[in-house]
Length: 138
Image (tube, rainbow, N blue to C red; front, side, top):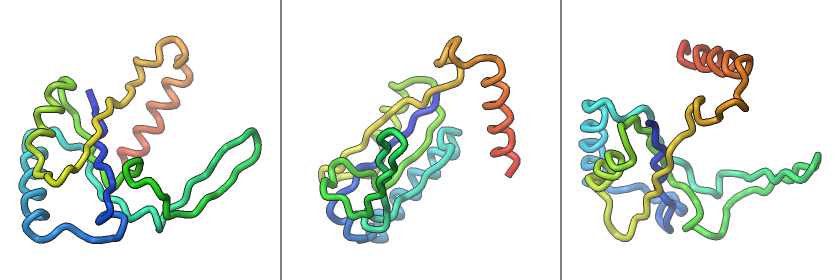
């Protein structure tokens, strides 16, 4: 099972304030444990929403809204992508993360091809497999 681990934004991350050296070292150690255990597939931090944009879709109309976006509790500051055996395992890993100060982390399972059932026709499944192979080849 793959899980996306979403680190929620806060006032500091939205202001572009980086974590201090101690926190970065602790996070580096935690990330190293995830890699050694074969759990981590990806991990990235995100720039503040002031450098981002949103696109709203209404029929054929597309509306672009530039950041910043007001409600920080609804924003994402970074993410991990983990490969684990269960949601419980992901939660156990997450409990070990070196966060404090009211940090909120959201854990969401990533859909796999089989989750789509018959809607993912053999042709669509082959397309998905070709695209994944191209991505992995880069």
